[in-house]
Length: 71
Image 1: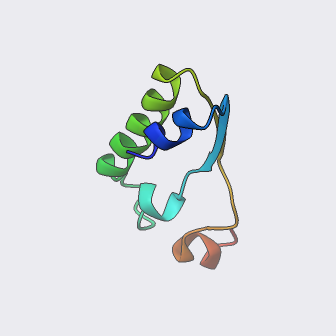
Image 2: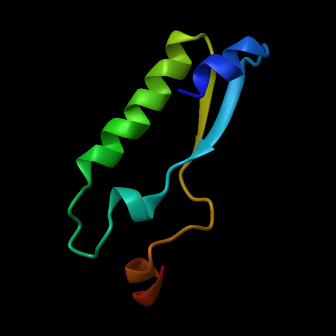
Image 3: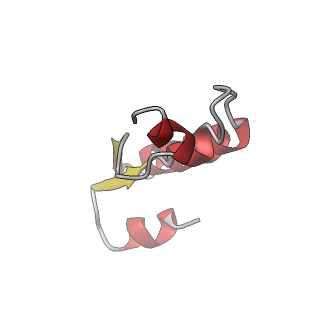
């Protein structure tokens, strides 16, 4: 995973975004639990490496279904 690289260069924080199109791929509201597991694993690995995760919940990547109903 990418964490070993980040840990090796001495960073103490890491900013990342959650891609909502992966988390909720359609307008049914059904959650993609594989995506949840992925983001949990990334965050857990950062914390376990002593790196503060800074999570951006909206980074201009809104699913098309959400954009069509007003964003």
